[in-house]
Length: 99
Length: 145
Image 1 (cartoon, rainbow over the protein chains, first blue to last red):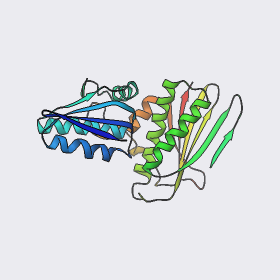
Image 2 (image 1 turned 90 degrees about the vertical axis):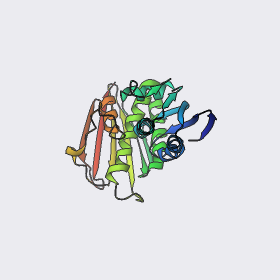
Image 3 (image 1 turned 90 degrees about the horizontal axis):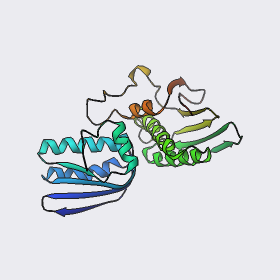
Image 4 (image 1 turned 30 degrees about the horizontal axis):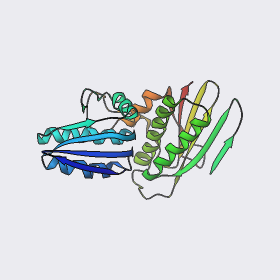
């Protein structure tokens, strides 16, 4: 997994790519959590993530809940078809902010 | 070790992997290659790869919870007949306590506890068996084709 972060106003956009599994979740959290802790709204762009397992889904849930606690917002954007299928299997499409 | 039995009606492939989270991508690659060879369509293939990866992850996370630096190996065997897929996992970790294998309530949204749910959603049956020596655990997943 590689990542890129862009800033625009009070929002940060995190672009992740590759396959997000148990081996990659700590790296994803290390990028996302400090932005939320800093009070940023975070756009998580998953257009180049082709695979996500339950560990990756846990990162989405944890990030979403952390943002709620901090009074910011996590928006999950441009989800690939394969990852959307997993999000829907977890019945999270109404919970997460998907765009 | 990678073994293959080629037959037009009964295919089986088996491979072993170090019990470590870094092996999960290799488990997925192996599974994708096998399903491609078995001519499983892409949509079902990716669902099956997820189920397999979740089961392998459970071995790393639970059967070897207290042994993160183990050099043990786990094996995955994928067999296919005309009508059914059977996926077996073999490991030498802590024996599985079947009563403790359950997923979280799906509407209780919190991190964790989804791997077993995904496996149940994707597969038709899940059976935990004692492994024949030298294995301790043998998980068998099946899916009708």
